[in-house]
Amino acid sequence: MIEIYEAGNEDFLHNGDMTLLPESCETECELNGSWEMELSHPIDPDGRWTLIQEGAVIAAPLFHSKKQLFRIYKKKKNRIRVTAYARPILYDAAKELYLNRLEISGTGQQVLNYMTRGQEKYRASSDIIKTAYVECIRTNLIEAVQGDGDHSFLKKFGGEVFYDNYEMIINEQIGEDNGARAEFGYNCKEIEEEIDMSDVITRIVPVAYNDYMLDGETPWVDSPLIGNYPVIYTKTVEFKDVKLATDAKEGEESFDSLEELRRELVRRCQEQFQEGVDKPKCSYSCDMYAIENTEQYRNVKGLEAIGLGDTVQCKNKKLGITTTARAISITYDNVRKKNSKVELGEFRYNYLKEMSSVAQRVEKTIREDGSLVAEQVQGTIDAMKANLYAQSTAAKKTNSAAFLIEVLDELSALYGAMEAGTQGLRVAKEKLPDGTWDWKTAVTAAGIIADLVVAGKLADKLGNNYFDLDEGIINAQSMIIGPFEVTTNGFLYMKHGETTSDSYWRAIVGPDGQTGETHFRSGRIEADVVQTDNIHIGTVGVDEKTTKTGRAEFSDGSYMDFVDGIFVGGKTAEGGTV
Image 1: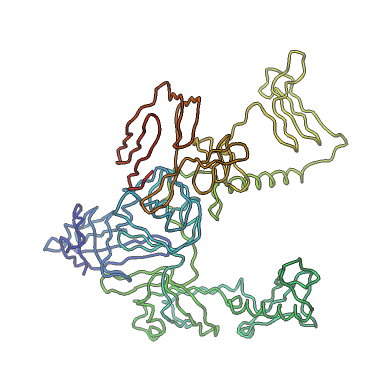
Image 2: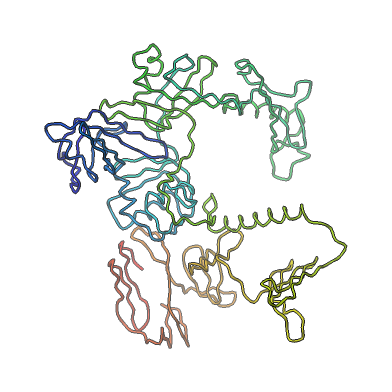
């Protein structure tokens, strides 16, 4: 049954406002791509069609559920029928759940909990246990998770997305392996096939560390499928971790004899064949309705009931091989309750480009493993290396140890000087009264000296500590700042010389014991005495105002308590204590 709820009716636990009798209703679902429903309804005398309006919600069965909600975002009408286009109701979060600034490091579930905090309408779950750092600015939930920006959830964690009404599921892999099978390789024009042999290997010539190979005139290992193809696909494969004991470092796995090493090379080759390097990449697209009355239908009938992401064993009669493919796209007939089209193949990430914000940052600030800033630092280093390498290819040797470039016309925009040599370079834009150049910036192998440094971010090589000068943020996972030491457990300890005291500034603690971030900001603080039982300040002024006793309350219900200028506690909007 397909129902419709008028715009404004959010009571989806009960029946809709009207049952629809559409001519057709199909939903195309692409793995990690868009889910789009198209419904065509006649201009009926009962007036059912009049409820098909922008903003209304269609409830229809889908391959994984008897009732999935889709909100209409566009319609077209002529004198015969009305056609509606709708998307999963969770896409409402693209308009309702605005994320002004989000920075968090954690597992997939922890990051999703943070993204959906403060509301109960939208839910998100994940089985991804690896950790990564996610930063989103001026975006929404859908874009933050599935957009093609460098900081989206999928870019940082990977995973595959599945919609279930108001819940978004992002797991390492969606779909199931229920033993579905299909047979191809017949001359059936209704089934599209793509067989890619470009990466097939049926004969491996293995090479170990230090160029050890198999002996004899045939130093290779053949695949059991080598006779299935008209060409022998030969490739040399290096196994650099396969070493003789004489070549290995202490603690490395190695082999005492050349005979043992060669047996390991054979085993490695056989392992490669078991993983499928001897099979082509096969993809198939089946129009189930176009072949349902043909003889070939029985070979693919099982595809009618598979779900998005499911695994299918695909036998190719012509090649005599069986490959594993997944349902990467499904068109589901919501009226007949079965798949009308299925595309099988290898999964390829397809980020929702239409969900990407125009405010995406150009800078590459996050590494693929989730570490903050390190990508920017590493990328900058790599870019500099690339540029300098390119420069070196055009560089000409000179007999001089240094050279000077000058523009002496004071009216020229290029007025200035640069001196460079084997010990470094220095730059000047004006001269001193004695007529010599006033060198302002110097770069040597030991470091940089400058009157002014303008930068966006300053970071260590690993990205653990950084200053974001554009945003005014100091992030420290492990850093000593003056008398304080920031530690990875979220505490700011007092530091006296080499001794760390027991006194600290505590991070926010959530209702389930999780720790968050503490941001402390002030125009100016002046202190004569600092003691550390709670943080007691002898004489203090903040923007020329004296301290007071009372409670600072915020619009979301959170508050902070102060007694004579001493912060003594409080609560967050989520119910956690501070």
